[in-house]
Image (cartoon, rainbow, N blue to C red; front, side, top):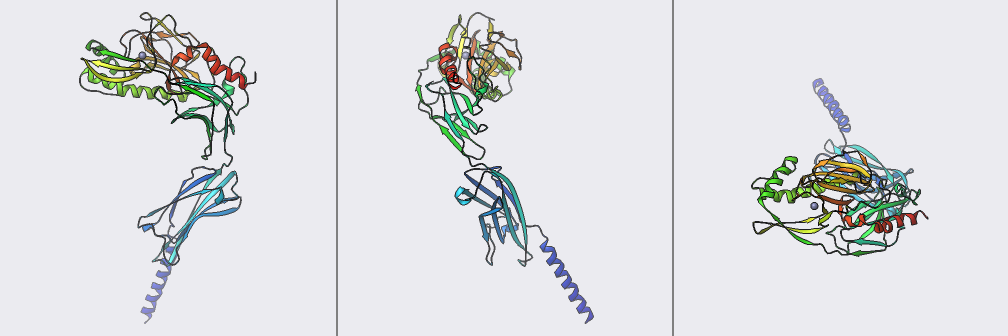
Length: 457
Ligand SMILES: [Zn+2]
């Protein structure tokens, strides 16, 4: 009998121990994956709650600000359990707007998630809580274009001066699916231009040679909370007929350029005959080179480094090819490839000095695939220039060069049939027609006029 009582006592103590232990088992694990930091006019909360078998007793997602709590989502299991289809993790997504939280104000706030799961054959429960700090930004950004008379040529460049508020909001110009960042107008250091208002910005943009002339374009501003605004500007767009040309390929040319280019790059590794390898260089490597060239836009200076003087037009040179020529490559009597030539080919004499089109900073000075020995200069606010096929490079990355300072000598490195300079202008990494930048009237009317009007002089 004493033995039996002792056994009952031990069992009771053990049961009590298990009961207490069960209460200390970890609660469900909670992850708040959205919003990451900012909450705007509307926001989406995304929460993942994990418990064995997905069994939850209840959960709640609460928005806390200035001592006020608003429940965004909750579930209570009246007698039963909240099931997550047998999976361990339950994902809850809720989008809320200002209407859901009437007292929502700009400033700090917190999202608190509480979840409970049953343990010990559902005799006990264990709870966990997670919280995530967020910033509420309710003021919509504003953007209004100040400049007037925008004329955009297909394959060409343009610029807008606009006001974006608040001053630190991300803004620029959008053309179709391409965006062009804006820069503080205080970086436009030119004669007669003096803008100190931090809300006034400048954005250079392009209408790519392969975009439609009716592509939507507008100034935009958007903040981290997802609030956005757009500003229209008056404009006219003009189509431009691009030339078609046929480029004959022969084995002498292929035998010279194909192995030479492959020696300078490991971005492609084509096999087969030289014409097969050429097609890889002219297609895949051309695309990779364009990506590399576009990547330099991120390094662009926020200041206009060229001071508003026209770009060196390379007069006394023969134009061998113009911008956006549609080239068909012919080998052995057959059309083997088609590419668009995004630059000007300018020939003078073999090994002639190649000069900087304008003041700028060297961002690239080495072989660049099909462009051979290549120099890229940054002129600020996303405007850059490229010099290809050089035989010799006389500058290095980081150098500041003056307008018409020598960058090197012309040559025929890369995909070049003979000694010439391949020259192009770039706007935020997009290749654009340099003709406009060679035109003093265009520089005056499209750039300097707008900046002077904005500075009230
Ligand atoms: Zn060229």
